[in-house]
Image 1: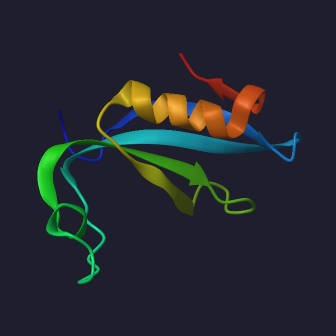
Image 2 (image 1 turned 60 degrees about the vertical axis):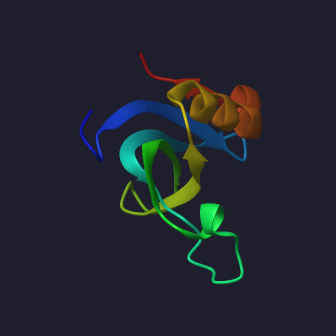
Length: 93
């Protein structure tokens, strides 16, 4: 799988009326926190299949995306987005 490739997209109705994008991409590295106070398994980057969830920022016209988390599988990333946005989220086929 290629790093940065978009695997899934959705539309989220922010405030029940403003359509914003949701996307999940693949990375071969899980990024750590970088915080020296964290344990190494949280602090350091590690090579591991990682699915990055991002939400489009309101008013950005797809130019700015906010982080929604890193997940070990595509389905976990989708499930998290669905839990956050509920019925206001519609996945593209």
